[in-house]
Image (cartoon, rainbow over all chains, first blue to last red; front, top):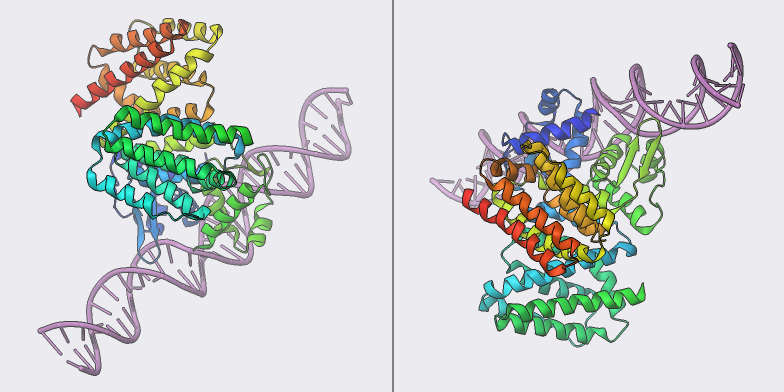
Length: 223
Length: 223
DNA sequence: ATGGCCGGATACATCGGAGGTATCAGGGAG
DNA sequence: CTCCCTGATACCTCCGATGTATCCGGCCAT
């Protein structure tokens, strides 16, 4: 195994074992390199790799720190990975989302409070009559994220966020705007919100399923 | 933005745009460094980072290649990230698995063939009367993986694989062996398999839910 | 006494070059 | 024709030096 890979494993070990805790500062490059028995350059490669997946946070002139290790932060790296996938696997990602999102929506129906519901309503109303693709993507993302956050499971939230990141979503919406599907999709958003207001978990789950299935169906016909 | 981060983005861009396809070979370090306008050392940091998350595959003496970009390969990186999480978020990961696994099991009930069913049976039978923790973990992993693979969705499969990786699972099993819960858990495995043999999607889904919920419940009492 | 400015110390960022090692392909011996 | 050796290639590792961002303590003006 290469020295850099060893260094990655050792740093990972230090964190997992608890020797380094979230927010802790690592020894400076030269010291850590000496401690682990490799050159500064090789160590830097290890640190850079761990920083890409948000395990470490390097600040020039200051030092290198262990991040908070929040699920949200760590799963951000997932969206980086998802970006690499091409059209042929988008359907598989969507199928996973079709499983997770209805469940999350149902969970949210029991936990979401009136303030959050009002915020979602306001957000839907704020969308103009002829929104741009960017506005649609942002609105869509915000709407679903708002609901999933109310599910109370941050891992679930981050996972869904990563799975259908901006890139994927934009691709879908860009196609949808060419049809008359926009209004129907927005209508589905309102129905999901209505179910949540009624605290009707089953209705919420079903509308969420319908919502994603309709996207899935449309996508299947165009690919 | 740092030159290394720029390089990461540029290489990512080359792959996403299609200029570099899966299996393609990158220009050699010195050429690529010149092309992107940075030093070899900095480029190496970028390559190493992308290699950690399985986007690139470097082979000494040969060259650097773009991996197959299979979902399975890319989501392997997820398990690396999951390893960093501590006990307090294990429950959240398990909650996600509780959503995904029953759905995957139900999907598998329609698709799994007799050979696969027989293989799973044989595997359950192969486990001795007093298995070690390592054997239990390996068996558990194989059993669930075998089922989820039959769901036909490789993204789903890799995701579940990553979510409850060896580390997490080992932690759970290590606790379970201290109770008498082992035989009950193995019994649940057999019931899941039986439902699959009956092609009973709802029974399969329910047993899978029960199976994970029981782990969840046990975990909740001990944490 | 307080507030802002400035310079030193610290730590990461980037670079260029040198020597090492693994891999592969092609030529020569058997 | 097969096997082994050798050279070319490309990544691996290291070193030392310079650039740059950040932090902090002291100095000066108000």
